[in-house]
Image (cartoon, rainbow, N blue to C red; front, side, top):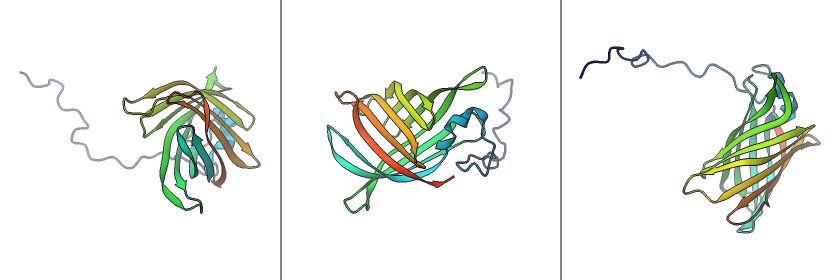
Length: 196
């Protein structure tokens, strides 16, 4: 066996790099300029917190708190992250609930944004969803084009999400098709802007 004629890769013994040097922001007053393709999604950028109600035919109804952060780094997409927690009858936290991360991208034609949006959303329960939708003023409506699941994930087959900015708040309703049920209301919430 001969030695590798190319030698070791240049990064093999290199020192560590500095922290990530580019800013990601949910506050339009600081950080990089917003990419022009994101202007239709501008009302959603920020940090949001509030409460909602959830349920499904296979589970009991529940109340939850939620934080959503929608940010950008100057490129033509938004970073989406959400974390929720179950609330008791006195609005006290009981336990962590769903977390999601993802990306929202306007569909571009000849370098200009259309009203179409693509979204990739994943969660730690083994489900990845590809949504296609449209933005219309301060309303964003999306439906799944594909749902991928790990072998141990719950059987989710479709989803529909409707978001809107109403009187400065972020409202949404989410329907889900899962475990033998068709699209059924699952989550709805009202979140107040707390940053951005």
